[in-house]
Amino acid sequence: MNMIPGRSNLLKRADGEGSVQVKLDPGVTIDGAQVFAVYGKGGIGKSTTSSNLSVAFSKLGKRVLQIGCDPKHDSTFTLTKKLMPTVIDVLESVDFHSEELRIEDFVHEGYNGVMCVEAGGPPAGTGCGGYVVGQTVKLLKEHHLLEDTDVVIFDVLGDVVCGGFASPLQHAGRALIVAANDFDSIFAMNRIVAAILAKAKNYDVRLGGVIVNRSAGTDQIDRFNEVVGLNTMAHFPDLDVIRRSRLKKSTLFEMEPSPELEAVQNEYLRLAAALWAGTEPIVANPMKDRDIFDLLGFD
Image (cartoon, rainbow, N blue to C red; front, side):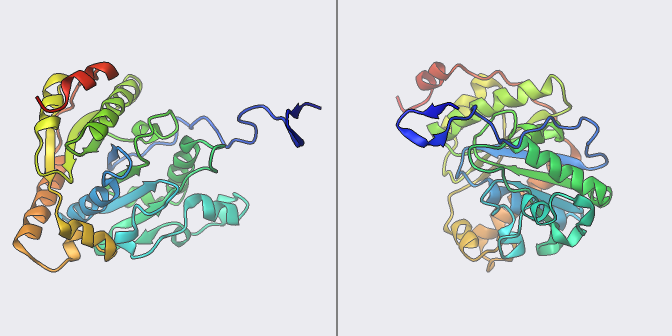
């Protein structure tokens, strides 16, 4: 029996032992709906963007499903007004016998009819995000929920671009990147571009473009876009009403009207309409890490 030096009470186990990791079933696909995967640096506002985009699609008369892919399971709380249990939580409650679950156990209706699912995440340090996403899509298909859906939005954890958290790209038609006009989020965006291009070799997913968030200007993103071949699809400034909407557990479409809020709402509606109509796929060329340091910054 091998022991960890200095910790005689602990057994030494192989790294990864006990992990929840599986290969995704290639037969489990999302058919009939337009599928978008939203990525970006952690804390950049992906959940705010995803939730308001979901509402914008619903305002256009589309049947929308938003799937949160984050252990915090807070992707949809502005839509549902509270943290919902995750798919992994409810599966665990029935000892992973999915046939015992009802749709209402893991799908919750939010504002303006947006259907909400929180996939959750694997156990910290031992699991694989791909397993969580795979089980969620499988469960939705088993209950035929995807047959009544026009738009699916995956709101994906932070800037993690490992194979597990890149797994929504296997279902998406377009991948959208949320970024602010700063170095850190652009650096993360560059890595996400590389992950999308890698998945595009074997799946239908293509890069849709950049959603600039929490930024007064776009000069740094414009500079990066010009080099790698990206384009900005929408721009949302750093407004206090957006911050307050999260605190009030509300989407922007539920906040007290104002001229600046109306402008933001219209930008979301414009973005939703453009995505629904179909966007040209982008083939970008990610930069080397060192080159980003040389490119960005003030002269």
